[in-house]
Amino acid sequence: MKPEPGVSGPAAILAGERRALARAMSAVENETEAGKALLRQLQPHLGRARVLGITGPPGAGKSTLVSALIGACLTRGVKVGVVAVDPSSPFSGGAILGDRIRMGAHQADERVFIRSLASRGHGGGLSRTAARVIDLLDAAGYEQIIVETVGAGQSEVEVAEVADTRVVVCPPGLGDEVQALKAGILEIADILVVNKADLPQADRTERELLAMLSLRHYEDWTPQVVRTVATSGEGVPELAELIERHALTCANQRRSHGGRVRRLIAASAADWLGCRVGG
Ligand SMILES: Nc1nc2c(ncn2[C@@H]2O[C@H](COP(=O)(O)OP(=O)(O)OP(=O)(O)O)[C@@H](O)[C@H]2O)c(=O)[nH]1
Ligand SMILES: [Mg+2]
Image (tube, rainbow, N blue to C red; front, side, top):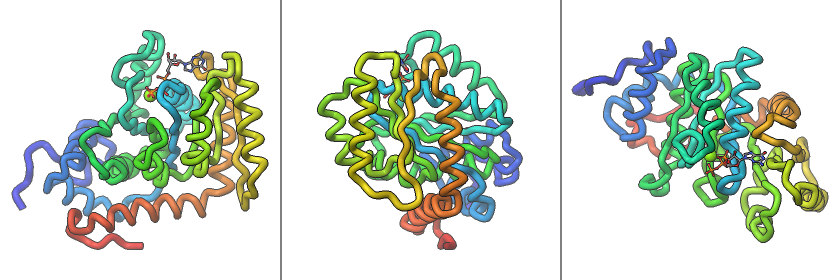
């Protein structure tokens, strides 16, 4: 196979070299031969990372929360990778200046790697692309990977499937949208965040979510509701704590589930990878 210029071998990824990682991500996103070969070689090194999925309607405060959670990870000395699916802010503009400065500071941190994926143009393959980028971050030694997706469409549910812990952000004042959330993405929530708890109607949203949860029976983990003000950091330590508790409670089961889904995605693209993936 003719090597493509600019894509390093697995050693550079395993050593966590950032430029090699960025180039490898472009290669797997563009489904190049070098990207295929690299992913194949990295398969034995995957499965260490914890994957956290953050989803919710546009403007719910997901990116601001992710930013705050990155801070919480760094405080604990954990390397964190972020995959943002079609974000409008603060990763690629649109946020208030303060957000961008905060995220900019993280972006310059050696222990943080942020990658944006455009959902447009991927067709049904978004989860596939996201899974590959997650695998690269995993191989590069990012222990916590956070995936941000917008909305409650099928591709978001699919992306959430690769996560070990799923957080759904529900800002106050959604009105009918809560109904849509209920029908879809709430089904997969481990943690429900009432962000923008500084706004009126936060109490009402929290009550509605709790009422909804009380209608169902859960086996080993009952979804929890937590209030946050992502812009000030209020409630973020409690959220980080809940995420940790969920990871510990459901660690083995979910990690094997998330890992299995990622392997299934990889296996369904076995022709693309040109190999069979174990599991
Ligand atoms: N009042 C208030 N505003 C907030 C809070 N969290 C975020 N915001 C603001 O809400 C706006 C949207 O925040 P983002 O973090 O970009 O929201 P997002 O969910 O990532 O948005 P998209 O990625 O575009 O869907 C920004 O102006 C934030 O500053 C909060 O807790 N309270
Ligand atoms: Mg965002």
